[in-house]
Length: 467
Image 1 (spheres, rainbow, N blue to C red):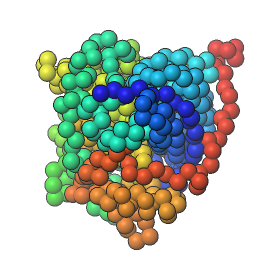
Image 2: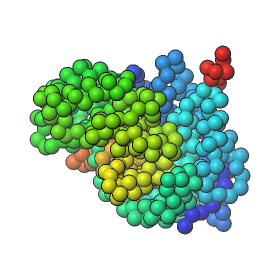
Image 3: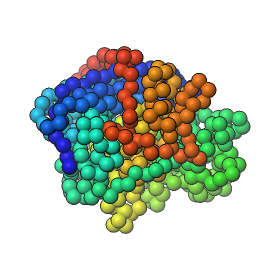
Image 4: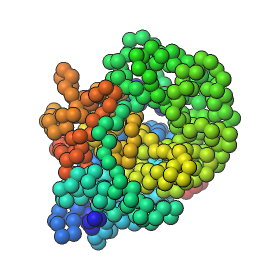
């Protein structure tokens, strides 16, 4: 049953995260990043106050890839998204459901961010992180786990933002959810990652026994074809079968370039090990080109959108263009993932298949990876991209007391490796059993005293205003 709440306080913190190796995707390479943490205090009608938390990496040049912006400017846009959302959420002082509050703020959030030249995808980050923290507090107040609470639609998710659905469809979908005990990792192979030999993709110490792989593309069919052929040879040496996804991060300029890649996959015998095991291709073209281009004959393959998923109507619009799927990322909004999973189930029942995939933006060990993993386990994502265990060295520079808290309370998710604590991969899978605690998938909160307040961003104006 939905509960009503009012938000009484929202605070933001951040912590630097150094990478163990560079991560290159699209046109950017990352060697370090900033993780943002959100702490909210809510008042639950008739139940008193509760505190909740969330966390997410601020990924440069992903939410906003425009070439005239520096990486730091795109991070400032994300910080502004958070601050704008804070003002909107705190301005709503009356009691409402968690989803009702989100629905009242999301339109104003996108509009306010647009005035500061922040695109809709980046605008969504602020509400997404606040919503996760609110839900954590709400579940703690009710002493309910994420899975039990969502099965009863504790957040009050309805169809007011998705007129193609009705309230009953969402309620039925949630009521039938059963937590996946295991979610397979999909090992990311970045553009700068080694392919052959020690440290390559077939090295167990590197891939952690993954049976699923996500291969990054750079947008050049010839270059990508040659690289995929090398990867196919290495994967063929593994003693078990593998499944693959490709991700171009908007690097294929148009349908012509994309058709050239598809032709290679169809006819180049060197790419047969890739083609036969390929599940889907993720966000090949820029988001604006994607929204204006029907896939036509290419729709025979399974394509999904990711960066083009910047609104509640993005999935139906993509479906009309020939796309079969859409990514779930908690940084884009947990409620949007749930309604998109509801859509995929309904459309598939009418003759699909349509699906929602699990991707991530280097979700870090601790709160971020646990909440994103729980979301996937709820909506039926059987394998999910996990960058955090690969590009970051365990908990990195997270203070020891905080690290030990997560390790002690979620022993199926973490393991000790010398002086480090890192994600525990069990035969290529992450386990979800310890996520069934009260709250949003975490028995503990981060150590707020060890963080810095959110850095104040530099305000930008849109190019139209500057003219």
